[in-house]
Image (cartoon, rainbow, N blue to C red; front, side, top):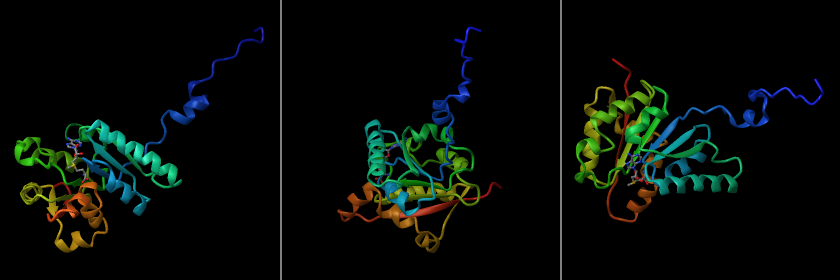
Length: 213
Ligand code: SAM
């Protein structure tokens, strides 16, 4: 050994790997499906700082907007917004790839499918087929799915799909209204603010994921 030989550093000892390889991935508690511009999670993030939230959005540029928005908010308010993130994906195709079985406490479906009449049943974000996937990722017995829309026919369609599904039950109006998250879902999404400026009403409900039979 001429003194020049340095034993190679084990990859696991490299400082960069300690920083970037296998960072602990936090469990996602709440997920906003079709989050649009991310307004709902931006509000929920500071109201419920101990919950981890992920917004899923299919449109590239909209998802990119959300990511930038959250980075800017973190800069502006250091220590806040670390519990929220956004991802571009087709939630109707890939949801079960993101979350472990029974891991999600809350799923939000806010003002989805504005042109739902033109879509076939299977293309809608709430369908009997997809409810099985939502039931898969929601916590058994305690997970909650929230729906809100300004389109009465769409509300009826979505509520009926949930009510007919053996793994969901509709929460009573009292339980739904007294849930502190309900008013955020109804009023704090970007689309909700648009509906507020019109004379259209809002229709909302929530459904508990029942224990497996
Ligand atoms: N939830 C937001 C709100 O209330 O402001 C946005 C409502 S917007 C009418 C519906 C959003 O769902 C759109 O941004 C759309 O791109 C997104 N979306 C539709 N299908 C989706 C899918 N399969 N996966 C993820 N996002 C989807």
